[in-house]
Length: 519
Ligand code: AMP
Image 1 (spheres, rainbow, N blue to C red):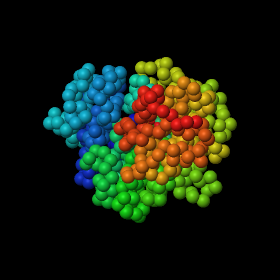
Image 2: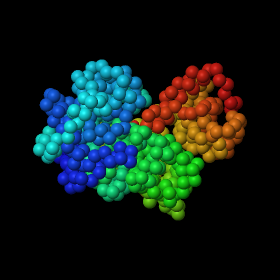
Image 3: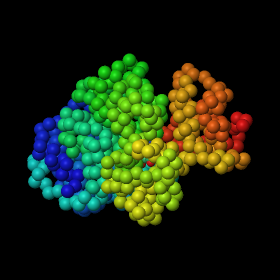
Image 4: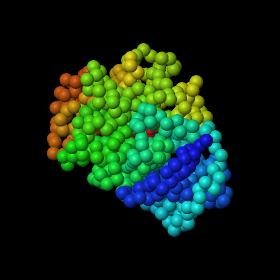
C-alpha cells in the first residue's frame, strides 16, 4: 500500500471527471493525471532512477506539481519539494544533503542549472512535454512496490535556527495525515475543490493527499499564488474552494472581503473551508475573520515533523460563542487530532499540571521517523516515541492546547519569562495597528528587554507613549516593550511566517544606539 493507490483508485472510480484545473480551465481528469504520472514514472525508472532515490521539486505552484509527486511515488522515489522562494545556493545545499539525483523546476524559480544534479527538467519545456506523455493505460505500468513504512517525502524545515533539516515522512505518515483530515478538519466530497494558493512544497501541497483520497477537484490559480481577487472569482467560477492558508494570508482574504463589501453569504459562494495554521492567529484577527467571512474556518497546529497533525480547533468550536470559555478556546489551537496524543512537559519530559506552561510533545502515526542523515538531531527531537516540538504551551482541563511561543522566541528579562505572543495580543487591541511582532533585545541590566516592531494602518500616526500607556493598562509592567520600531511591513518567509530571527538581528544591532523608554 502506498500513496499511489489513492490515485489509482480515483482513476478507476471516476476516470473522466475533471480532477485538476489550471485557473478555471479543466487541465486533467483523474485518468489523464494517472496516465501522465505513470508515463513519467516509466521514464524515470528506465533512465536508471532506483526505488528510494530522491527527486527535488523546485517549482512554483503548477498543475504538473501533482503529476510529478505521484509519478515519483509510482516509481518508488522520494520527493524533496523545496520552497520556490529559496536562493539557488540554498536549494543546492538541500539537493546535496538529500543526495537528490534529478530536479524538476520551473525556469522562473530556477533560471540557471543547479549544481550537483544528474538531470534538471523544466516542467514547462519541450523536453518535459516529451516526458509527461500519458501512457495509454496507466494500469499497465507497474507500481514500484512500497511499504507503508517507506520514505515518501523529505520535508526540509525552514531552517530558522541553523541549516534546514530533512524531515523523513513515510507513506504511513502521509496516509494517516490524509485520513485525519476527514475526522478533525472537514468532510470532503468529490464535488469539492482544493485550491493551491499557498506554496505546494508545504502544507498546501500535503493537503492534495486527502483531496485525492476523496476524489475531489484540485485547482492551481493562474497566478500560482494568493491573489484575493483571483481566488474569490475562481470560487465563483468553479464552485466554493477549500484552502490552507497561513494567518497572514487569511488576513489578506478578510481585508479584501471587508474592503469590497463582500458579505459572509457571498464569501460562502467562493470559499467552503479555510484551514489556517502554521503561525499564530491572533484573537482580534480570527474574530474579525469570522465576522466578515462567516463560519468557514478551521485551525490546525502541526509542524513538518508531524505534518498538519497535532491539534485542531473545529468549525463548530470556532462558532460555539455561547460556551463559557469561548474566548480562551478561540485563542487556543484546539484539541489533539485523532491519531495523536499531546502532552505538555518540563525539560525532563515529566507531565506538568494543567495550565502550567511547558514544552509540547506529540506522539502518533504522523510523527516523522527522524531527520535525514542526522541521528543526533533525531535522538534529540524524538525521545521514547514522543516528538519534542520546541513549542511552548499549556493544556486546559478539556484538552485544549494554548500555544505561547516557540521556546526559542521566549524572552527572559530580569529573570522573568515573557511570551511575545501575549504582548503582541495586547498591542493588537490598540486601534490603528495592522501588524506587530515582539522580540527580545540584549540589555546589560536586564539580560533582555522587550522590543516591538509595529506596522501601522495607512494614515495612522502614533506616539510610543500612547502604546506604552495602552500596555500598562493591559499587561504586567515588566512585559511592556521598552522600545518600538515603526516599520512598513514585517519580514516574512514564503509561508507567511514572521522572520523573528531577522527582527532580533535588527534589535540586537540597534540595542546599543537606540534609547529605551524609561522604566
Ligand atoms: P513548519 O514546520 O514550518 O510547518 O512550522 C511549524 C511551526 O509553526 C510549529 O512548530 C509552530 O511553532 C508554528 N505553528 C504551526 N501551526 C500553528 C498554529 N496553529 N498556531 C501557532 N503556531 C503554529
